[in-house]
Length: 112
Length: 114
Image 1: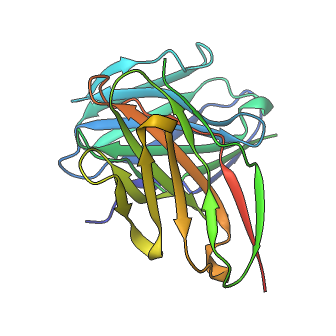
Image 2 (image 1 turned 120 degrees about the horizontal axis):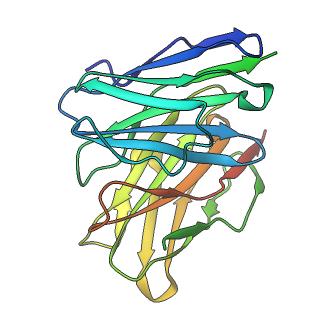
């Protein structure tokens, strides 16, 4: 298995632009998570899905953030409009119930 | 609510020395416990996990951890550290009856002296 695949690896965008981050979970995993990592706040859970259904989005910072999982093999995290304080590394992870997460390599987002 | 503390923000050890990274958790039920490692610029990699049974669990890269219910701890150990072990280490806790929402500790950064 190729593991959790995230794209792009790096994204630099201007403030106000829309940013879309993508994730392909491991086949057969029924949970998918989006995390944000910053030096100041560490790892923060943004949202997670079970069987493509959002279960808890209480970590999504603002309405500018949205996430979708149209099918079991794909999820997106969108920021519109982006702001400099959104700069962070965004991780996607997937798991099967009862097991640890498998993380993707992350997307480093820089908003200038 | 679940919580995880890692009392040491940064630890420095010499190559070949033993290592222990501390992790304490707060949760009322039987937890799932994990240790992850993150190398610079990389995602988090699972080192080991505890669900039940033997309280001493073995992981990859020569790491082990011991679950001590009485102390609410799950400390990570390695008998002899290698320079390649320099990284950030995260402890995480999840609940068997709380879906899959794990809580991560703040991390401990490990530096290894030659």
